[in-house]
Image (cartoon, rainbow, N blue to C red; front, side, top):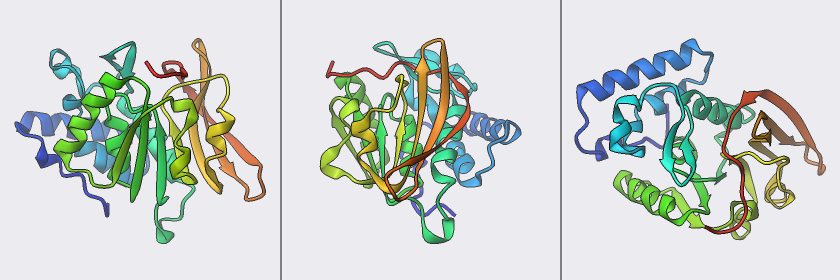
Length: 231
């Protein structure tokens, strides 16, 4: 099973109600077509209500996006599960998960925590400093030793740590920035929403080893825009 277990018990105040809600969410993800049991179990063990404002705790395990301030949202659980599944799917489990993964757009930290429970090394970049401070508190609370975060312009990626076996973007641009694509290994995988605010598609790019990418469309989604610059 999962070699990078998420120590959910690190969060205090977990009650049976929260666990039952997470169980219902996990079951709903299966019914909605998520096939990767590793992804489902990590989401089952992740207390999503700790990643949102207390006033929204009652809605934490609904399959919906929720506001986290600064014009940003925590993605709906199905989207987190689908993007994680799509990122891991091309890798042969017998040969191990992608070793180094980059996330663009830390936000609340929820997607980062899900990924960090499944891969050896996760790097995450966030341009909004206050959101990153909050996410880092959650990361420390969980004791995630395999996760590093950075306050920077997400469009720049994390060149000092490149190349990455996989990259995930949690905000949408018209295209994937070339700088980010350049930080993938030749056979790396990238999952990202692309398009305008009114029409976005989740895509997966897979390097062919010779400098080109094979693109797959994975369905319609709705994300906040990918912005450049610190702020």
